[in-house]
Length: 551
Image (cartoon, rainbow, N blue to C red; front, top):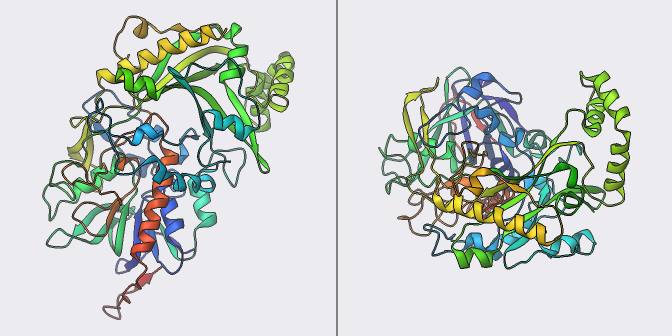
């Protein structure tokens, strides 16, 4: 696989390919691997390098003028080979059928795709995301896959339905989550050329604004190179995809794809926070039922987290949003499993870790029995046990990304983010919290003490912030008056320019987005392979002094 730092290429080097992919995170890495089948030549651009760099981090600086957001962007966005998989939590889940529907109580809802159409792509995500099973692993399907009887008593599924998240497992390091950077280096075909420290600063349209002619890319020192391609795919994330389209305004003064003033609008995330608190001392049984479970697929064991989902029946009946809740453990500093992990990794707390292991050996024995015999999460020493909730958002036109008057070191305007939350999101999570408390009490478990904002019927506290799931800023729709890209992911009116990632999602669902991002990326790669079945025209050498670098 050809690989280079853009800074090391001669300034006169011309880079030509069939498909130029911008961003090496889950979407870009998947498209590069899938799309490089056969003779297609792919250039994959990554703004960062193989290691974290302060200069690359600084390019993610934002202005926030709406609801408070996480301002340390490394915690939510990573400019580095592998993208934001460096800081993700590894939780995966497919979207629900209701997420794709046009719901009359959710303005702006409805995908131009159906749940059934996405199922084949979800199945194909398993090796890319590091999953034991790609789709259909919630509800009773989980217990069938785990080859265990569903526990009783069951939830009242007119109110709540069970839900399971699956945790990613890296193909190279089975003790880590999937990190797309090392996976890229291990598996990319020779027909893909990876360029690191290569920051897209502008897409250049033809004079009529109907096709992208080239991409202007900046090296680490600010020098520019040009990439030409038959197709371009933006895979830079929910914030950066919108910023790049808005910044590419040489021909279209409002930015590419923005004639209807839609680029950057409908910004959504997943408001997430504490709904209530369980008594850790009385939580053993509920943690065994609604905690972690381990399931073996082939030679490996995979972790699943059991939780609660607001029933689609209730959503329709009461006009609520899709939201979920789960048990979140806050572990004591002297938890022996934490200490054992520290000893295995050679941490600096060696004597404290040894004392914790020896003092709480009984917890290790119980935890080992839970893991090996019951295939459940480990028994831990807990400081607290929270009920945490997460909800989708109503697509809100005024929740948006625009360009700041300030610029970064490459001269690009910063993203100005006006993120908003709405009453329906707060109402849905309050309703979910009350139902979980009532249902677990009915089932014989000690219920949680609900948080003050829930009990008082108040809005979200300040602790509810974005959780690195920016969504919807280049939304998908058949009608160009309602979306930036069409059902194929191509920007309306701009031939050969595609967008991938959560920015194209019309609604966010309740689920963590990475598995759906990868499923959509596989679909985009299939579309591109079909598009480029015809052989590409041979590139020409303009002069003896210019090198044409093909991939």
